[in-house]
Length: 83
Image (cartoon, rainbow, N blue to C red; front, side, top):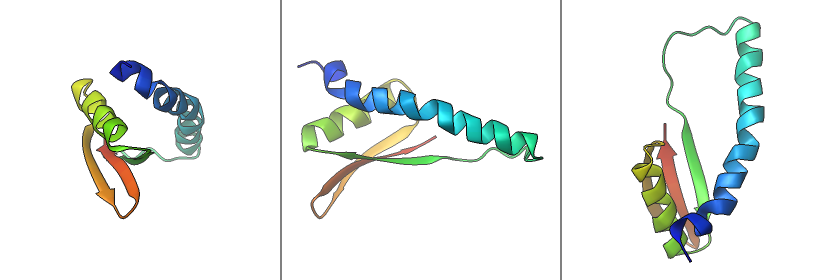
């Protein structure tokens, strides 16, 4: 299975969350939040296995969507991404 096929459920989830996230940002701006300082946003993606963890991390970094790093703690595999 190609890397892109493996990542499609994650990509679809990100796309589904993008509109509500943008709506929150626009609402904050309407209510006076006009902070000129850039802010980092951190995302943690939980993944079911090491292969998907590595694939997602490579995809984020290759596409320059952020700075991703793969990791594991106890029974949980994850990708941390900072934008």
